[in-house]
Image (cartoon, rainbow, N blue to C red; front, side, top):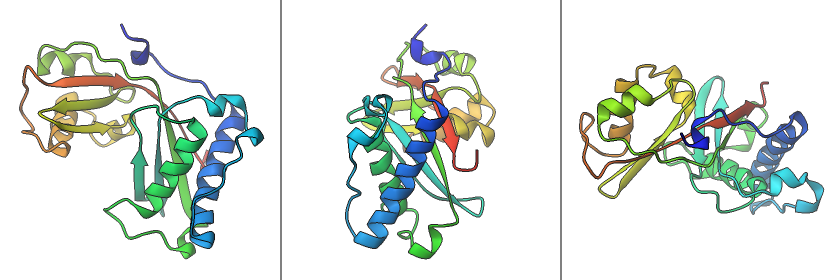
Length: 196
């Protein structure tokens, strides 16, 4: 079994607060200065400089206001969170760019992803039997299309069969389909928010 398929934790309280602070500062800086937040890596714990991927979800009055993330760990976690926070605020095509009046009431949710594991699944049924609701995030790829659901999505789609159907729909694929070319990667997340 892949290590990515076990529960993933790595950050202490102060490291989590630092990431939440960076996410807010990145958005505030863009709103006021109009450019990217200048991060100084020397000010932060070395754990935040490891290459890890993240998702930043913004909520306003309990409703989604933006969500952008990375599946590949291509930059330090600190930079990834800052970049994804800015993108969630200004580049999520489902929403208008964030206005400065919304910033103070904004709730930040950060998900730090474990390295994905890619066990071989030979059927849709095998995958559904293996999935752990509330724990596993899933990346699904088929025919050049790809989509992911974070573990938080299980709260709305608790049945693995329904979860998978919605994920395939998100990827632009037949919701009930499966192919010998279907590729699946599983990951877990360490999730925390400004409301914690």
